[in-house]
Image (cartoon, rainbow, N blue to C red; front, top):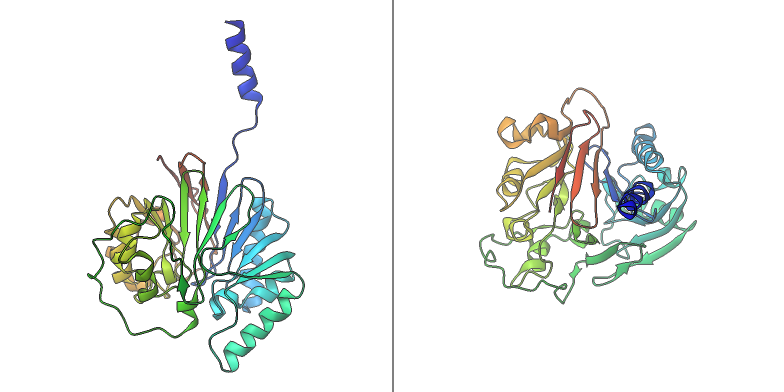
Length: 333
């Protein structure tokens, strides 16, 4: 009996198991996702927009401070569009960035793309640039960060436990070929024990289907960050329903992404329990938006900048929290 009580006391004194923490930061319809590993290493996926009086860089820095992050170990730039790479110089002025991860050369030309890429080039001179291809891994301690797609290519071999034929293939007709940077997006799968989170950036319709047709090369996930902010040229049911997420996070803006069509596809996914949104999507109306408690920024007249946080345990359990109202919900595996 004495040994039993001693065991209880020692268990109480031991530190709690550390979680994988993910902050979905509101950059008004762009992307900035801060991922903090249980070992304390950080990944930031994209940086939002430039300008706006440092709005997005400030919001990222605030989230980093809250998470106890003093530097960005890996900055993953999914592609070279203004709402993803635009904020790099402003962010780098606020937080040291050790590694810049991208898909390689820009595939668009013109004054605006050239200016965006030039600003990015100047920023990466202060760190180390890493160009990734499908199948590569980003070496974050305690996590498995697998590159699924990059520069228009995808993984060729199924991940462990995946590779089964996808019966949904053929139900969503291909769209016109997308020759923009969106189709070049770097997409990643982040695994922590039994927990899996997928982020495909702005990868578009046909490229997404290539990942799961004729066979599903990915398998299933726990959390799906909606591709392309929940826009109509991404996120066909062929991939979303094959992934079978338990929860979806939509990094939409009030008037960017979050379309009724995309929302319905996610909402109807088999096994989905909830959709969480950074903004109330004006185009969706009441029927195609999550409940108010699941939306970080429901008031379109106020620039609140509220974020959504996810904390995952290695056993697959995770909790999602809305910073606006502190509403939390835990999802058991």
